Image (cartoon, rainbow, N blue to C red; front, side):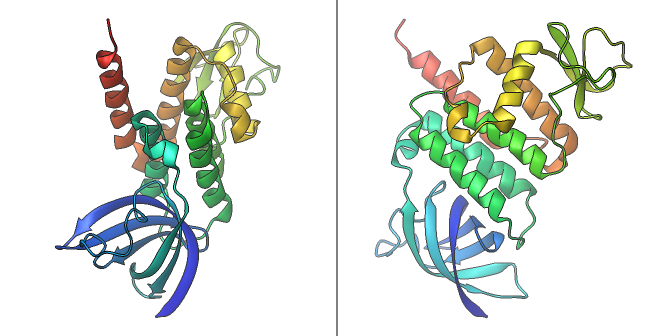
Length: 261
């Protein structure tokens, strides 16, 4: 057992016993870990709102080399993401990258680049005046790259030219597209408009804070979201169903239904 210190994003929490919490964390130095916070739900808990999901914290914990469960000693908030927690839509968006990491990342393997990608994505969602969903799209593309399934939006898989035509077929197994001039044996994949493909290329390479500035209409947004979810699920089995996306759709439907008519 060692007393260890690190930064973390709280991915998820659940009740444990009468007064405790089980935390799923993605940490800077130890990757994804599970930590027990004893007494965190009691009236006299010293943690308050420190251990809420989608919070950036500094923690000290008892780390066991041979166990998957560790025990919290201290925690304090580094970034509360107050605007994100104050709006259901932002909160639902932030839950998507957290669920992706929790479902697919093996425990105990540090990846500082992925930690900073997650932290940066949540920070942009919290601070963006508009276009916060673009940050999630950019995260998904970068996570595919991290996982070894980087999509190629630059050139046709057959003729190697840049986009030709207005409707292109993206082949999931090959990780690239076929332009309108090149016949191809179509496997599993999706047709994409040239405009959507160009926007996806931008989201993959542009700084996260620039992604939220890109104008995306509703039709193009739906097209990209269908593609990203299908491509993720094709290559990464644990992401076959994401509860956070269902939650986001329910939130958006509820907000639309509550608008004055």
